[in-house]
Image (cartoon, rainbow over all chains, first blue to last red; front, side):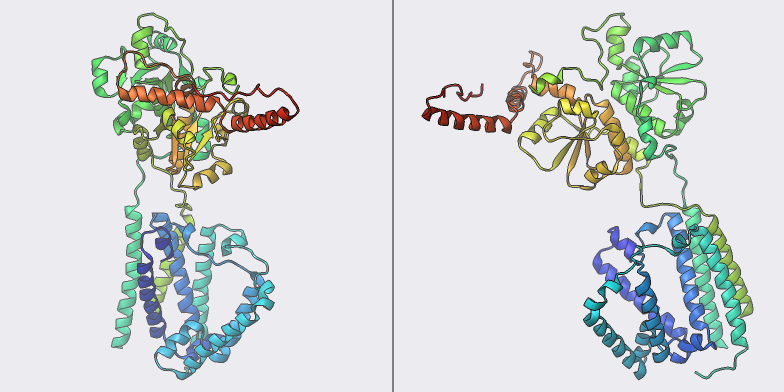
Length: 196
Length: 177
Length: 212
C-alpha cells in the first residue's frame, strides 16, 4: 500500500497486513487461472497456450486504468506510485537469464511458490534454485557492480521514453492488447488440445 | 457446466464492480467552489502595485464625480459599519468576501470597487486574494477608516505625513554606525 | 464465451478512450484552497512583534530564520542580525524552497513595513507552507521600538509596560554595540596596550565602557 503508507494514512503494521492479504489474493488468482502447471506456463514460449499472456496483460491494463482514473478522481496521488529505476543493460541481461530459467524450469518465481504451495516437488527445487542463483549473484557482486549500475535512466515511464502523452499510450496499448487477444485466441483454436 | 457458470458470474461481478467504482468516482468529483485563475508562479505579479492604490482624497473625488464607475466598499464587520461609514459605501465584511452573494459585486464589469477597512493592510489583503481568484476592477484606498474620519473628512492634514508602508521611514545608515 | 469477450473488449476500449481524453491531473502540489487561505488570512497568528524577534535574536534561538525581502542594496546598508536576503521577486525560487522545506525552522519575513511581507506570506501559505511568519511593522517598527524606544507616555501604565520598555532599552544596547565584533576589538586593543606598556607606549586609551 505504497501511497497510503507514504502519506501516513496507514501505519507500517497495517501495511504488512494489507501486503499479506494482497499476497494471498495474488496466489489465489494465479492458482485459479491454472498457473501451477508448468505446461500452461511454458505454453506461451512453445506457442500453444496463451493464458499467461492474456492474464497478465489484463491485469496490467486493469491496474493502469485504475490508477489513471483514481488519480483523476483525486483518490490517489500518481506521483507517489513507485516506479522502478531503469538500468538498460542489466535489465536486458536479467530478462534473458530469467527467460531461460523460466523455460528450463517451467516456473517463474511467483508461480513457483504457488505450485510449491500445492505440493509440486519440482516447484520446490525451483525455489531452491532461485536462492542459489541469488547467492551466486551476491558473491559476484563486486565484479558485476559496474555493469549492474550501468546506464542509469532514472524512473522513466514507457510513454516518456517514447515521447508521447500518457493518454495516447493508454489507448494504443489497449488496442494492441485487444488485437493480441484476438490473435492468440485464434492461434489457440488451431492447436490440438493439450492434456494438463 | 455449473463450474463455468459460477466462474462467469463471479467474473461479471468483478467487471460490474470495477465499472461501478469508476462511475462513483466520476459522480463524486466535485468542482471546487473557488478556483485560482492565476497560478502560484504568476501570483507574484498580483502583488499590489502603485496603480492598484488610490489616495484617500482622490478616492473621494472619484466617488463624487463619477458615481457610475466607482464604488466604495467597506470591509469592516457589520457592527463597525453600522456605527459609521463613508457615504454610499457598500458593506462587505472581510470574512464574507468569498460569499456567493458578493461574487458579482466584486467582479463587475465597468465598476471599480475601492476597498477600505480598519487598516490599509486588511484592504490590501482582500484585494490581493481576489486578484488571485481572477477578480478584476478592485483597488485599495490607501488609508484606514480612522484616517478618513480624523483627517480627510475634516479637511485636516495629519501631523506626520502618511508614509507608504513599504518604504524606509528612517535613516538606517546611521543604525550601523 | 464469445459474447463475454466481446463485451469486455468493447468496455476496455471505451475506458481507454476515456483515459485518453482525460486531462492529466497533478495531485501532488496541493495548493491551499481559496476558502482556507481566506480563513488563514483572517487569523492574526502569523504576526510576530519586534519584541519577540529581539528576544529570539538575543537568545540566539536556532529554531527560526529571518528572511529580508528588500532589494539587495537595502540589505547591504542595514539588516537584522543573521538575516538572509531573498528579494520579493525570488520568493518562489529554489533557494527559498530549500529554506521552507526545513519544516522545523520558523521563517520570519520582514521588509520595511508589513504589507509586502504579508503578501509574500499569502503566496507561500497558498503553496501550503505552514512555517512562515511576518514581522509586524517591519524595520520601521524595529527602529521605533528597539533602536529608539520611546518612554511610555502616561496613557499606558502598568508593570508589563515598564518591563517592556526596560527590555527595549537593553535590546537597543545589545544591537547598537554590534555584539561580538566589539568584544574582539576590545580584546585586541587590550593586548596591544599590554605590549605597549613594556615599551612605554600609551596604554590608557582603552577603558572598557560599562553599560548604562
